[in-house]
Length: 357
Image (cartoon, rainbow, N blue to C red; front, side):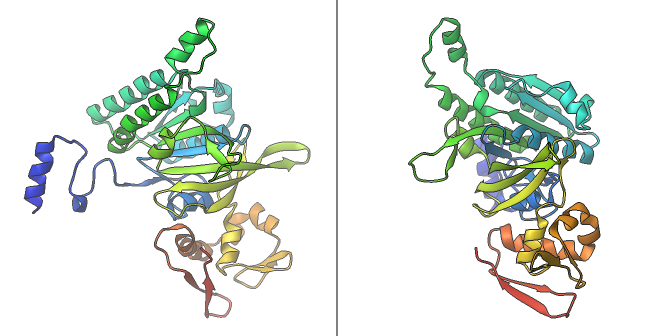
């Protein structure tokens, strides 16, 4: 049977086709890229040690000043730290990223290429051309691509109309965007290159569905394997705003359950806090216990949640992280059971807790 199928595949001329049991080139997830946050990794992949699928598109949506660019830069920094030979291809449509911004965040600027782009057509030409050459060269150097942001991309027609003094809207833009992602999605999968796309949202007033909708049509919505909506609470050190507590809600997920959410802490200087957001999961699954205003730990001692977040390595021991890995699989992965059984160190008895998904 496999020889018969291989013959059909060969005759089809489809370079992406393959037998499912042997893996599907360009479609199967071959690995994950750590985002720098255990909670965000779990939301995206169902594992503390997962993250962004290494050959898929992830979209980060949010209103203006949500921290989408800083969020993306935090993941850029983590990617370069984890991949000494890795490089970043950053398509900037907002003229927001500067060399100072890169270096101030400890990002190796020698491994970051910035591509200012203004139109959908220029992004399509450059991005697809780069990926094609990467595939043809047989290069294996890790690459992470970022488009920041999709919503600011114009079209050549719109640019020409503006130059001519016309104010008419280009109604072909949504179709152009959809066309870009139709081509780029498979090529990124084959190349093993992930793409982070930031995009603005607008309020869904009086309509069905989520309260915030991604701008720019349906192209990104269909192409992205993961869409996360970001909303931010200010995080101050005295009177100085140093970052934000960001709520991350999974709007679309092909690997994990939709409508799940976590909170992460983003520091504008150092990026994502690795451990922030784990305490609520630990409490929900009986690893920690909520006792009045404090958190009871597996050893019976108590601490304030702020103290745990300030000294996470002290509280998130190897044993706690092992239990959390089981818990996040139950919480976020498709096909997980409803009942969670985690052995308590305190009394040696398993504690069962119903998952309310």
